[in-house]
Length: 311
Image 1 (cartoon, rainbow, N blue to C red):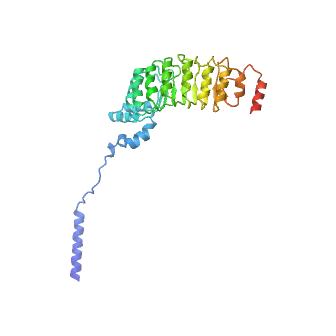
Image 2: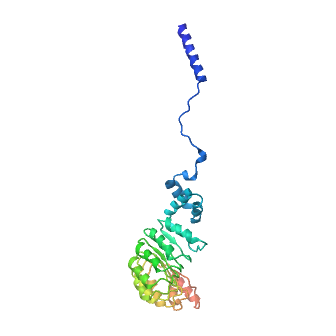
Image 3: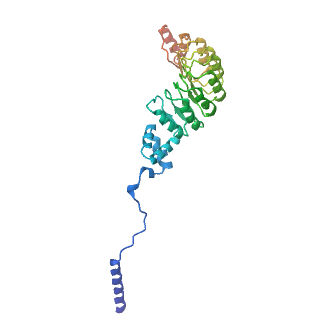
């Protein structure tokens, strides 16, 4: 019994001595060099592009793009899925060079706003339209004076999702372009052709027969807008909510009455500088919808009393 006890103690002592002199083997583990991690190591498709770059402006993305080759790839990948492009009024130096990059990279634009871009030409715009024709639903080309109807062709024919089209002060807009719109675009909900003097009355009458979904319409300072045009708008654009007729000198009480009678959803009527539109037709409408022209030159107490009785 004693011999067994002594042998056990000797064995334990020997094991203890070995454990003190033996160097433990390192545990298998993944080596991580934290100093080498960068922003670009975060998953691009799941995190960087959908969660971070969406908060960056176009200017931010171009600044990022100039940092490194990897940053360039990230910025251009973010531009590829960007749904909106807002450059209205941006006439900064060398913007044409940046726009060429946008034309090449952007592939999923839904809203395109280029109003008052004096530098914009057909040569610059057409490649962008070609790459984004499937998704575009809103296009604003107001006061883009250096493009032609050639740029409008892919918008009219190929942009099947188009809902908003703004072409104010585009003197290059012709009757032929509007005729093409009549054939290919019947789902517009907002349309602006203010200050477009080359379009004829007959062309507008035919055009509005196709736009039964229109809710916002601007025809300000368009000479060819007459009472007959307003009658057609009233007959076919029953969903109309807002109409701008400022400076349409050819319209009268007759056309305005026909329009407002046929459009039950109308909320605002803008008729400043329309000399043939009088308070005779406007007075019954006040209180029911917004009219931009104040009451002037009439018996105000009588009109106000009439409005009070209507309410």
